[in-house]
Image 1 (tube, one colour):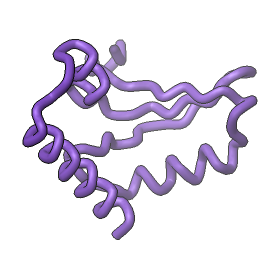
Image 2 (cartoon, one colour):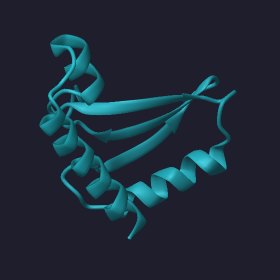
Image 3 (cartoon, helix red, strand yellow):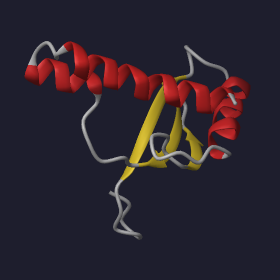
Length: 95
Protein backbone atom coordinates (compact mmCIF):
# COMPACT_ATOMS: atom_id res chain seq x y z
CA UNK A 1 0.00 0.00 0.00
CA UNK A 2 1.40 3.38 -1.01
CA UNK A 3 1.00 5.39 2.20
CA UNK A 4 0.72 8.85 0.64
CA UNK A 5 -1.62 7.90 -2.20
CA UNK A 6 -3.50 5.15 -0.35
CA UNK A 7 -3.31 2.87 -3.38
CA UNK A 8 -1.88 -0.59 -3.83
CA UNK A 9 1.30 -1.01 -5.85
CA UNK A 10 3.01 -4.18 -7.02
CA UNK A 11 6.76 -4.46 -6.54
CA UNK A 12 8.87 -6.73 -8.73
CA UNK A 13 12.10 -7.52 -6.86
CA UNK A 14 15.11 -8.78 -8.85
CA UNK A 15 18.38 -9.85 -7.28
CA UNK A 16 21.41 -7.91 -8.48
CA UNK A 17 23.15 -11.29 -8.81
CA UNK A 18 20.62 -12.27 -11.51
CA UNK A 19 20.41 -9.04 -13.54
CA UNK A 20 22.39 -5.94 -14.37
CA UNK A 21 20.99 -2.42 -14.14
CA UNK A 22 21.00 -1.78 -17.91
CA UNK A 23 18.86 -4.86 -18.61
CA UNK A 24 16.53 -4.00 -15.73
CA UNK A 25 16.18 -0.39 -16.90
CA UNK A 26 15.57 -1.43 -20.54
CA UNK A 27 12.72 -3.69 -19.45
CA UNK A 28 11.17 -0.84 -17.49
CA UNK A 29 11.53 1.58 -20.41
CA UNK A 30 9.79 -0.84 -22.78
CA UNK A 31 7.01 -1.63 -20.31
CA UNK A 32 6.32 2.03 -19.49
CA UNK A 33 5.31 2.65 -23.12
CA UNK A 34 2.75 -0.16 -23.22
CA UNK A 35 -0.94 0.48 -22.51
CA UNK A 36 -2.95 -2.71 -22.20
CA UNK A 37 -5.38 -3.85 -19.46
CA UNK A 38 -3.29 -6.98 -18.87
CA UNK A 39 0.03 -5.14 -18.50
CA UNK A 40 0.63 -3.06 -15.37
CA UNK A 41 1.73 0.57 -15.69
CA UNK A 42 5.27 1.26 -14.50
CA UNK A 43 5.63 3.94 -11.84
CA UNK A 44 9.24 3.85 -10.67
CA UNK A 45 12.58 2.07 -10.41
CA UNK A 46 14.41 1.69 -7.11
CA UNK A 47 17.37 -0.27 -5.81
CA UNK A 48 19.21 -1.12 -2.64
CA UNK A 49 22.47 -2.98 -2.08
CA UNK A 50 20.98 -6.39 -3.00
CA UNK A 51 17.96 -5.82 -5.26
CA UNK A 52 16.43 -3.81 -8.07
CA UNK A 53 12.74 -2.92 -7.62
CA UNK A 54 10.21 -2.17 -10.35
CA UNK A 55 7.21 -0.33 -8.87
CA UNK A 56 4.11 -1.20 -10.90
CA UNK A 57 0.37 -0.78 -10.97
CA UNK A 58 -1.36 -3.41 -8.87
CA UNK A 59 -3.68 -5.50 -11.04
CA UNK A 60 -6.51 -7.10 -9.07
CA UNK A 61 -7.12 -10.79 -9.57
CA UNK A 62 -5.47 -14.20 -9.48
CA UNK A 63 -2.54 -15.48 -11.47
CA UNK A 64 -3.16 -18.48 -13.69
CA UNK A 65 -0.77 -20.42 -11.45
CA UNK A 66 -2.79 -19.56 -8.30
CA UNK A 67 -6.02 -20.45 -10.08
CA UNK A 68 -4.78 -23.92 -10.99
CA UNK A 69 -3.23 -24.54 -7.55
CA UNK A 70 -6.50 -23.60 -5.81
CA UNK A 71 -8.96 -25.08 -8.31
CA UNK A 72 -7.04 -27.97 -9.82
CA UNK A 73 -6.92 -28.82 -13.52
CA UNK A 74 -9.03 -26.62 -15.77
CA UNK A 75 -11.33 -27.67 -18.59
CA UNK A 76 -10.00 -27.67 -22.16
CA UNK A 77 -12.21 -24.76 -23.28
CA UNK A 78 -11.02 -22.66 -20.33
CA UNK A 79 -7.38 -23.51 -21.10
CA UNK A 80 -7.92 -22.43 -24.71
CA UNK A 81 -9.49 -19.14 -23.55
CA UNK A 82 -6.54 -18.41 -21.24
CA UNK A 83 -4.09 -19.42 -23.97
CA UNK A 84 -5.73 -17.01 -26.39
CA UNK A 85 -5.47 -14.20 -23.82
CA UNK A 86 -1.76 -14.91 -23.33
CA UNK A 87 -1.21 -15.00 -27.10
CA UNK A 88 -3.03 -11.67 -27.40
CA UNK A 89 -0.72 -10.11 -24.81
CA UNK A 90 2.38 -11.51 -26.51
CA UNK A 91 1.17 -10.25 -29.90
CA UNK A 92 0.50 -6.80 -28.42
CA UNK A 93 3.94 -6.67 -26.78
CA UNK A 94 5.66 -7.57 -30.04
CA UNK A 95 3.66 -5.21 -32.26
